[in-house]
Image (tube, rainbow, N blue to C red; front, side):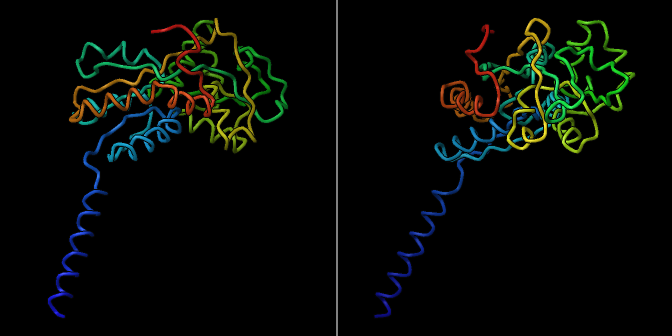
Length: 261
């Protein structure tokens, strides 16, 4: 009887060990992701984790800050900045490999719900004396960098910076300040104003695409990746229809919305 009990106990322990082993992720991967794209990329990462039995860690922040972190650490599998200029600026350094287009960012004005200050679809409104304006920092993240491009196109960037109450490091901090009522107007990525927890308090005012050109979201493979085959499979998922449906759900233009890169 003791022998049978011992046999059953050993069998149970073997079964538990096998189950534990099967649940242990076989690889851990790291995505450097601009703040604005964290929501759709988290959802896509969760799908991929279940299908491939891996773990995906997401480092989020301003696009330039993230690139410098990836470069300094020598670790990671993907880099997703908020606009393609970051790839252009750093490609020659040798860290960035192949990329896929996972959608488009586009700048827009964001105001309080109902647009109580009657802001028009013109960035020059940021110079109005009766508005409290906040702006992204051009040196830390894509939202500030692209805001500068838009305002430089109108030759008003220095004036807006001078008039702004303060500069924020990324789109999340801009949206949080707007929701608290700290400002009347900002210039941000339009998708951020359409997020579920923002849309109840904020409105998006779209700008002419000639002024606010859609910016490609390029998911770059890092040459530091220790699992390049898995990394490429993840890129394919994000760029395919299943991943694109998730991007559209979060307010982004998908990768078929405008010209190719």
